Length: 339
Image 1 (tube, rainbow, N blue to C red):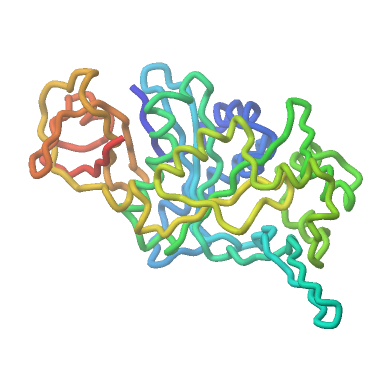
Image 2 (tube, rainbow, N blue to C red):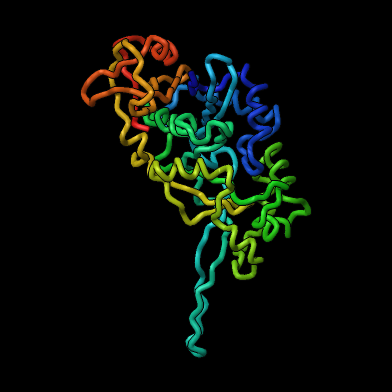
């Protein structure tokens, strides 16, 4: 059985394996043991803290095979972007260049460095092993975070954003970085992302041009890459699009990947989730509709993806193994939403 739960210190070696296989550009999942250790520690501290509003907290979850103990995926939530360091994006906008005398009126596409998205909650660090990509467990790894947010709304902002990894080839070459960032740093995209993962994106972002970049002056390859999704990030994009996330006027400053946004209360898994009492019984057959189901805990948060025979207004029937995995008892309430 696969269960999503908060990461703990003992998970570090297995989390490192996940980070090592994640695509270049996922700097929120750095292949660096110290950064990953800090990420887990911060999550543990955040879960243990009394929180009345979103601040510096972050929450890191892992997808565990309870039979083998292997970790097959991970994901995270940052409660408030830009709380401890600036959260940079490129804002897509249009400048008007006009001359009444010459009767010229031109619209020019530009990119402006900004931190407009500061204060939003951020979904980050998504990774799932490739055999799970087209299974309900990829949905579990991504969307169970949203059930956690539904259970603890005071910990998160009114809007959620997600930076999707942009285009890069198997050699780590990014058309957008080559057309923009490489002009300001004498390093390739993979090296820049590696350096950002080891330290922080902020110090590189602060060396980016603060004046608007005129898009028509960029190479065609860089222009075409703007807002495009890395093939290995397509699963994240698709899942969150079904949740109601939409592309905004912002892209990533390194690879040009799109930024998604949604009102927290309008996200499908949050808006449609229901608290339902539990009854113990036989597990549903595999042909039953699939649901995500979670307890409403903090440090003991647990979530599953499973077939269920459930009728609204009635208790949900779970097997003894499912009840034990969710760390609940018969009669407790769980939060569920259709897959």
